[in-house]
Image (tube, rainbow, N blue to C red; front, side, top):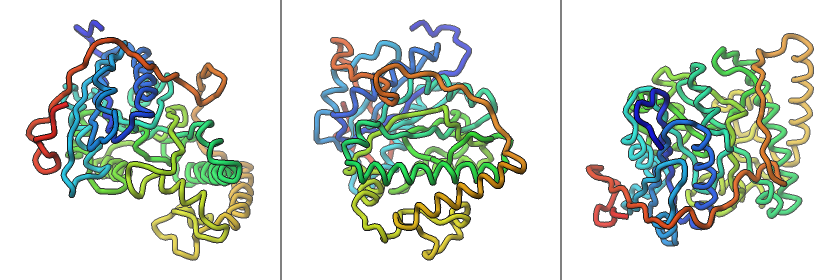
Amino acid sequence: MNIGGYQGHRIAVALPARDEEADLPACLAALDDAASRHGGPVTVVVVANNCRDRTAAILQTVRLRHAMLRWSAVSLLPDHRHAGWARRLAFDAAADHLCRPTDILVSTDADTEVAPDWLVRTVARIDAGADAVAGRALTRRADRAALGRRAVDRLNLLGRYYTALDWLRADTERDAHDVWPRHHYEGGASIALTLDLYRRIGGAPTPSLAEDRALFDAVRRAGGRVRHPVDVRVFTSSRTQGRAPGGMADAFAQWIAQGDDDPLHETYAFPAALDPASAGAEDRLSFRTLPAAVRAAGATIRARRSATPPQVEPILLSSIPGDDIDRIAQPLPQFGDGVVPGLGIVGIPGPVDEQHMPA
């Protein structure tokens, strides 16, 4: 790719990966497809941390067609062996490939396939005034089906409730920079922010849990405007055995296995759900009480829509070819016959065992 004289946004993708040999080829194929539509330089930076499978072996044989690939294999020390430091290292390594304040850092997960227009729509949101973009994560249909009918019904019911809450939040918390349609998800599967903002917040926070939410909280504290568009989409796995304790996979496993009367993880009855910081234990829903909460939220929406609707921004979702709406990219078993050298991380104190850094 000829990038000489390019004046648009350069993009660097931060991709932490731990034991992801099964999903990594499809993830990289989708990122490469998205890079082909951007029209400018895209670098994908993979940090394979504490891997015991063939993740590094796959990276040695991958050659992307439209994006530049850089990767490293690192061993995080025990006190830093969690998602917070893994994503921070990936973000920092990716940031080294950018130079202008308006260049864009994005991040996703290695068990996720981004939509073909993921980068194009992310750039459009930042050009429209957003400083950071929290994309929407959808689960892959085939993965959901493999969980069984009972699990699918439960996840669909939760999805209906969360979508209703998204509308109610948009109606309650009017924000000219984050108008309806929007969502409330802020997860590692789809993150974007400008290089200038990343520098201003001092880099990605490194809590052992919820590092993605901590990053967006840091963005808001720095005065950054966060957009939650529904057309910036990724498709992620529904696995119930994840790489990060306390992450989304654990939530899936709990939702599927729990009893009908067991409290749901971070799911509260309306209207307490709109202010979860003030919600109490008595506000937590169960799968037995969730249908009534869906009906109550729906009735409230109908009443409010008959008055003044929230400000609406029209969007057009591009079609995704294939026999499954969320099947966006086929795994590519072979990207090329070249070996891409690893990118060593130098000068990071604390989290990395330097004797295990070279790829």
